[in-house]
Image (cartoon, rainbow, N blue to C red; front, top):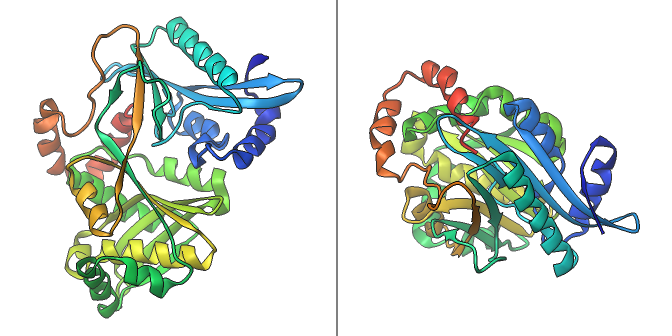
Length: 341
């Protein structure tokens, strides 16, 4: 067995492995290496195991060295899922060992594996994140009826308000809605360039849905990823107009409805922190939380990283950020967000 570093000549073989694996996720695709390099300038180390010319395991890693935050090696930064995908335990162990060696060579504070399931019980993990995934029915009406009554009423309110969804080829309207929503949460927003690169790299597997009202005013927007028979609405947000017409509820319903028309079988509502508003929102849709196991190999620290909005030390920063003019947050935010992997 050999552990190699992915280069451009092997990307199609890497993606073939991802497509044929039952454990790999959209975030294991080789395109993320290009996205992260061109969007943020971070160094990636995409490791793969090889036996007799065949890939038997993969591990995408991203090095984020931030003066403001931490120095980390993650699988995978800016993504909710990651970690080793391998044909057997021997391959998985070899990739894990190589990652630990690389982490030591790079002098990082910690190595982070963003696993869906617990892989290394002896390692500490952060009991903070959950994911929400649910099988879809074959028809839109069946899916609507499967949503709890109160939440279904929110969707119907958007329908009665005359909201409609459109698929956009560019990121402009989506970015306006998303950046406003993120600023209102007190979080630095990613750059417009990042979302355009995602669209350019993943093409038809990256879709932008925009919601407008009968006056053609922007209500909300969401960027979704399609992977095998799954849909993952990943980045979404609404304008100030969204609240009164339940624009976000209608938006996610439209993603679900259109995904069923495309033959999708699973709706991945993505990661949320326990006890937050987004956690409760997804529960109201009838989704049940599944724990995520973000496991850590600690090198230069004894404590798990705690860079998230629930940390009390960021309270004043968040409060101040919410008051920033939107244009200012769009300029300053990407400088900070590029290191918040």
